Image (cartoon, rainbow, N blue to C red; front, side, top):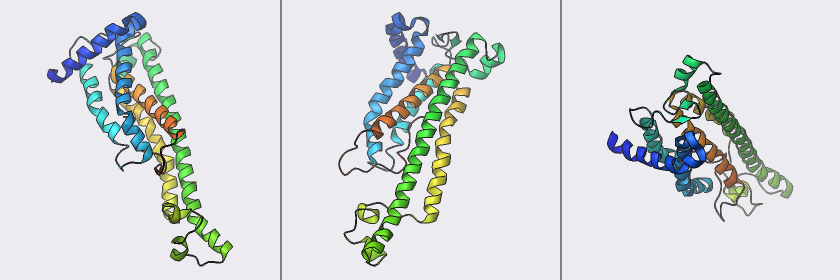
Length: 254
């Protein structure tokens, strides 16, 4: 086990030494944030591919590739080693929330650090949920418009409805534009999924409550990066001929 965790520990320690003039006693926590940012920068091309909808699983790859880093972070701060005594302000990076809150209470020096972490994660999760619901609503509206457009066009032009019209050189919507025509049941299912799925963002809070503070800090950083990255990619063109998947790609928030 130490064959894998020791190099990671040395990396964290080396970065903490570089950041100590700026972060003082919280230099190790700053090193964790920096490592998370470097990992997400390395995975950014995959996130761009997910935004373009390059492959069905492209949105899952950034999440899966982060798991080894998260596991190393978890192991490094749960086994005996030099990192256990390092702190974020008053709280040890190897401490868990239920240990700290059970001893000093939520408003103790260490408890306030965890409350701040949970509050920041909740804000990011709420931001993600709002964006997710908005994207789902746009996708559902687009699907409904794509289904209704051929019928409206057929009524205006007097041409027959159905497959013959959809296969023609119509107005560029619906099947002619490459958009699948959904049934009413499928659109209702899409609406329900779009309502529930964004709430999964708050699952990060549960994970952060049971892992060491260092791992919770990693979760906060990578989740915030995921939401901000997706917002930035949604505001930029994804390339000619590349469609964006309905409701957005799977978010890699770990």
